[in-house]
Image 1 (cartoon, rainbow, N blue to C red):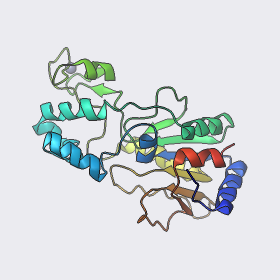
Image 2: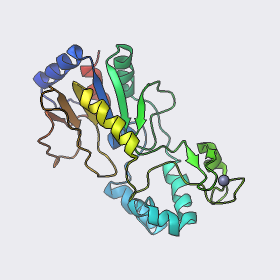
Image 3: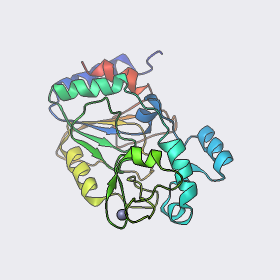
Image 4: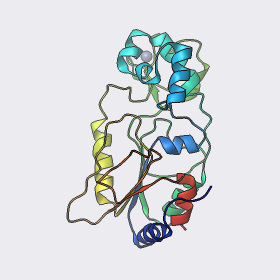
Length: 248
Ligand SMILES: [Zn+2]
């Protein structure tokens, strides 16, 4: 595919990253989609899911739905959420290179799918929880993703026989304040902030920095209507095509 971004912009961001000592990457839905997942928030998927389950994804991923219709929740969750087959992309490879250069100080993952298993990235903050760590609400016992996948119907704690709580932040719940603080501190210290796609929770996290600090903010968004005065550039290209251009 042809790169839409102006050559001068690419050169500018590339130089900033070369001179940077502290880059922070915020991973959003586009990273998931480019890695083989799908955006449940887009119209086609929304429609398909609603046809199949009678509810849209956003409804089913909410706390109230989980509490009221746990069986239906897990039918959707196991097939649609745990069923995504995710792989690494050139964008992840670029981030790993940045880490090896000692420049990548944190990766803030907004997708509860986390990063693909084969990708070795350190200091990942799973801001909205993770599909990999699930807990019994009674005894706090942890269950891995395989246990959830293998269970028939509603996954239950083998000890308490109650429904296991998935490790993701359900819609309607607040962000874990400790993780939010970690993310805010990481962003605050960055001289380059790469915002790689949108946040499915729509809770406009404002990654603010101290006014005296110079920070380059680059947002990747396919949404043509997205305008954001708080960022320096909005890139419309695929992240996995663009990052290799700016990260050696
Ligand atoms: Zn238990």
